Image 1 (cartoon, rainbow, N blue to C red):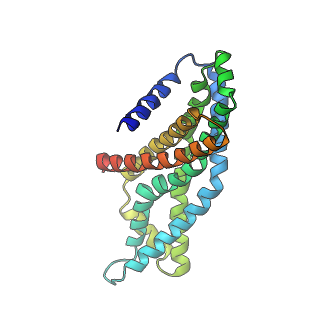
Image 2 (spheres, rainbow, N blue to C red):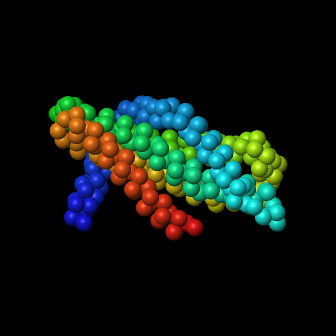
Image 3 (spheres, rainbow, N blue to C red):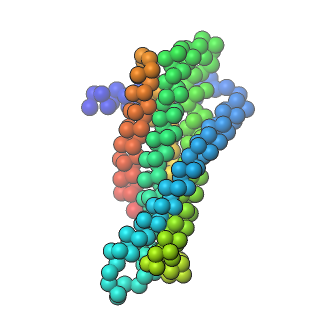
Length: 246
């Protein structure tokens, strides 16, 4: 418990430190746009591939379990849609994003720490926490919801394609089930999760990198801890959001 409280306190202090002696807004705009481009551009291919196949697999497995002839096939579209919006797109996808984006952030900042580049920034009077971490967090808050939106759309598309190709459910039946029980509140929950997870991934990873000490081995360890702790934090946050909002 002491270990957890120590790191939690240092994490909160680091977040507060970001807003001391900020640079010009133009500087943060440029850095933030760079982060957004890197996060979205670097993750888009894997998001597309995984989302399409997850949507397809979800449709086939749902159809496999619905063996009763009394259950309309359109219910497959309903189940896949609700699952994609509430859990698959915002949560499962972000575990993958944490592996890519989180490890990159931790290793990048950790390398700057062990090579004394962060110390050089502070010597020059630059708020290293704000300069290095704030653009990444803002970038995550913008990039992750965009990636989740793309993922949710492609999961539906993958489900329709897999259902039609396998004969499990036609596109018309899938769409009917999707529209009949669609609730806009599910999209709200999805975006709340996406924004929360985007913050957790970027901030926890930046924290791990910022307090890296040692050399190359410690940078690798920081990247590993960034992914592990980000995923653990997302699991807890996922439960809390579901408990509060659902």
